[in-house]
Amino acid sequence: MTKVWKAAPLPPYVMTYHKFWEERISNEDLKLADRVWAVAMARSKPNLHTPLGDDELAELVGKKMPNGETKPAARKSVWEAINKLIDSGLLDKNSTRKCLILPAEGFGNRRRGWKADCKNCTGKLSEENKDLIRPGMSGGSLI
Ligand SMILES: [Zn+2]
Image 1 (tube, protein in one colour):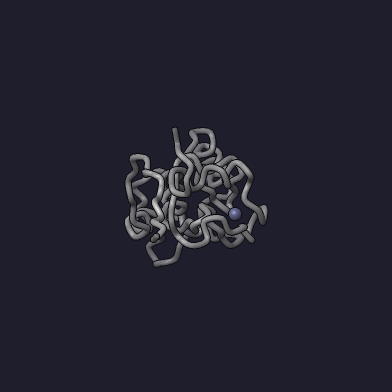
Image 2 (cartoon, rainbow, N blue to C red):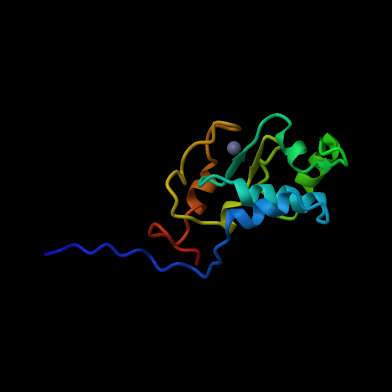
């Protein structure tokens, strides 16, 4: 008898494209917090972490100057934007300027590496993330 693998039914979801969000990162018409959010949406890894270099985030959401150079966003402003996103639930509470983390309760994926440790921040996924990162996709369910 052939064994048939059946995935648990997926909860309702929407798919987004990294490219769409990548284009929003440099859109200076958006608020700083929106641009920081776009970085996480565009560059998150399958484990929902977005590893960044020391001043990479400030550069990404900086202001383009007339001479073509980018003036990095002030560190305090970036910090405030991250905290605003954490407070509103759009980023995980462990997010920092070196690693933006999407909230596991809002995302799931089937990409390889979804349970990989993050080498840029804690080095480990929190237990709560491990349980939530793939709801409805590995036998579990959101309900
Ligand atoms: Zn991380």
